[in-house]
Amino acid sequence: CIPCFNEAEGIAGTVEEIIAALDNLDAGATAEIILVDDGSRDSTREIIDRMQAETPADGVKVVALGFDRNRGRGAAVRTAIQASRGKYVVCLDADLSYDVTHLARIIAKFEEMPSTDVVVVSPYMRGGTTSGVPWNRLFVSRVANWILAGFFEGKLRTVTCVVRGYRGDFVRSLPAQADGKGAHLEMLRLASVVGGNMVEIPGHLAWRAERRTAGRNWLPGSKITTAARQHVMYGILVRPARLLKYVAIVLALVAGWEFVVISQATLAAWGDQGEIFRDLWIGLSDSFSRSPHSFVILGLSSVLALQIALFLVVLKVLQLQQEETMRLLIGIHRALPKSERDACAG
Image (cartoon, rainbow, N blue to C red; front, side, top):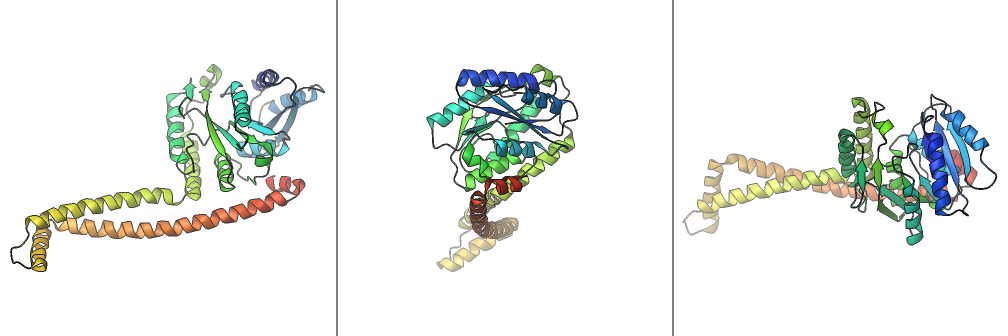
């Protein structure tokens, strides 16, 4: 499954490389390359239509689909997935930033672990590599994936990459709806809710020379800001308690530190009246006169930490309720006839 947007210059070469890789993988296997034109402004649609018409009767079949307007990568991927019929569904970039060798690695992982539902390709896990990627894009990508991966269960290192493998029946039953790049997060979210088995394999992300010189090294600031905001908000939707948990921990540590400071000052000024409560009062009074702000900080941080902790409990309950509702809706979606599921996906 390959989403295409203004890929007229390279899409034919991409398809040739994939066909060669499929032949090397298993010359007797049936396969289809589903190309979805996402409202390109160049001749991409004409090229993929021609490739479909020229597909031989036997061998790898090329399927050309598309939109009249740009709807987003998520819509293109979703359309390709729903049109697929294979046992396994592999999504690739149109420019093969992850080369065709990943195709064999993904299929091998499914064969090695038959219970696997999703294979995520990651250049950021141990064994993964990158080359030719501008440092600024690589930095943004690494930071984004480091932040977003924490919102998902498991030990995924890359959650924004389009290059993945899915078990066909499994992915076609997921009611994905997102049209933009958030679709990659949504798919993992849906897979996680229904208990899908997700594994990660090392990948190699390589920008080709023509891409590095195509003027796309820097994304416009507004696009970066919009994408980052959408991704973070989706992450908060997935695990709303994650960020607040760290706030509560910091406040608790501050409260603990101030408690130690007050305790030391109190013991140093401990009275000698022979009555424990009176001596404690003398010590606390002296400690307060020396550092009243410590008492204020202790009180505020303790109260806030407790309030956030209670709020986290409420959020956890709401998260469990949300996941149960999602499981119910996914179950209903799976029970629908395929024609109705396709209508929902469109």
